[in-house]
Image (tube, rainbow, N blue to C red; front, side, top):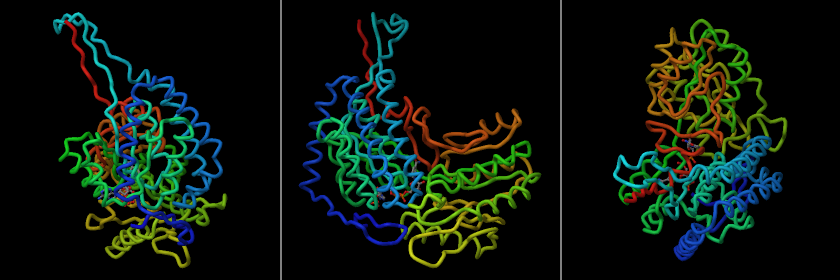
Length: 458
Ligand code: NAP
């Protein structure tokens, strides 16, 4: 895939970039190793100063950075602005908390292990490779690199080939903030070059956010090298609505969760599992609300849904919907590719899903909602847990017993009750099953790329 900015709203190539050759990749690895040696001897306070400065610089760039995101991948401009602000918040969160998260853990009673003292400490692993997706082109990277740098690791980023400007912007941001040159470098390389970089002995670990096939490939390379890996992969999150739910709130949130980021978030609610007592009202009002959304130019503030980020992404989504309709699904709204320039797809609501349709098991990465009518909570759980994914989930209910039951029985990395799944710097984030392993964010995220060193003293 060419490394280029292609505006998804127009299909016009705005800028192309030369891929780094072997010599440039080598130079960047050498820089990353040298920067890590120097960074690991700096104090938390010094790194926190640089991190806060990066947050300040990013906020000062709000307009230009937001426009860059929207032109590269098509999300509505207000959502790009929210992403920029969230990155600054995430950076400050780790500037404030890294030292506490990585402080030594003394054993309360060392005599039980025959020691005068025993404790564990967290140490950085070294240079970490990050393979990242385009859907949150700044946030996905920041949630890796902010904790990595605060822990004393350095990062090499292989960003998605369609967001090279975001990759280069972040590299310059951390340099401007004061981090040593090489603390965070971008590699402008295609996915075919990831293996050679990851097999390099100077790279100590890898984190990948992206699709299941990319995750399988990178995990197998990391496994072969016995290197730590964190995988944040796809999701087909269930959104359950029970009879006791506040239906107005459930419908409004069900719209927002399905179309945020033009429907291209791993934790979008994608499958709506509705109790039969409220199904008919939900389906009618939900499809009307989806149909009323404004689709258009993502730089126009009136727009609620912009284009999909890539032509292939739109083709994949259209294929999934076409397959379902050909096998008997009903489109309450949307369901076909519109005429005209740009990679648009309309908000779509499908019912009458059957198990032979690909959409039932596969992830719809765009504004396509599937509705399932269920008789009781047991059936809701069966449908919710039937995919191979297990990223996040949401439940609308006012019944305390139902609430507890769903929290216990949903196979997912997170459950949101009476709200939609969102990533917060303060909360651990990650999935189970084919959605990956490991955690980002919170204390767990910064500890993933540390050596937990046990010390025993006689
Ligand atoms: P993708 O095709 O897997 O690409 C993600 C990154 O992996 C890109 O940098 C891509 O490079 C690279 N890549 C692709 N195939 C690779 C391979 N075989 N070996 C090494 N690197 C490879 O995913 P996407 O379509 O851009 O993103 C959408 C997917 O990401 C969805 O499934 C979504 O659910 C998931 N996602 C998950 C999370 C999470 O936190 N769990 C967050 C966001 C997105 P190129 O661009 O050069 O191909």
